[in-house]
Image 1: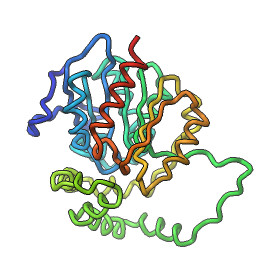
Image 2 (image 1 turned 180 degrees about the horizontal axis):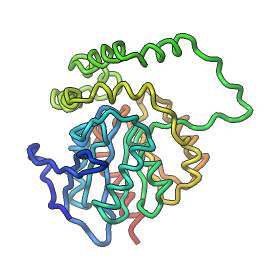
Image 3 (image 1 turned 60 degrees about the vertical axis):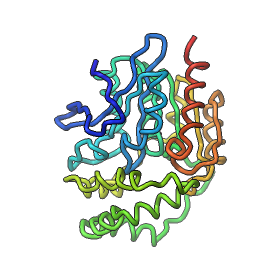
Length: 297
């Protein structure tokens, strides 16, 4: 078992070789026999840095792991086809080979979908699941006619499949001013948008291969639907919603989750798309109390 990494020292980073590529992770706190470890999984464009406020507090009660998904953060960025299946496999192997015991998976946005995939398809590795403004599509009801194709959207997607337009968009999106504007859209508390946060998101975009990872988003096929995954899920589920998220209707999506997993626990917070970073004290308290009351006998 690797030694705990101090989250206050940014020079300490640990790497794990996976499929011939380096995967970055951090671990803090001591392993406890009576409490499952936590594994924190970031969203698109983020990294382990986005969980800094959570790791610092939760390590007092749990062993806390955070991982950079392949293609993000300080992990390698090979020219691969990225998908939920790939990240699910990464999480499965990391839990099995590095952590070595079932964990509570906690994921935000894209990381939430990857965590749901891993927990649903590998129940032996998931003691619990926490989803924070999780991404992922639900199935369209069979009686609902498919929406007519949007010619503008199709044209934009086709354009973005071309190398030059995709590269130019990536160069625009990685500018600090653009990152800050995007964060201002999805955070209710603007004071949480610090220079450090902007730099944490910008820094990995300068790594070799980062532009190709960005381009792969437009080529990725959709994975399993959320409702299909929920029907396989066997562990307790906690939903934490930043209700001010402009990218999704949280109340509507929460109702969909309850339809397929009525035993879940959920809380709606005054925050945007990343409640763990915007209101970390609330998220840490809710997560801690839920694990100690629901998962520990």
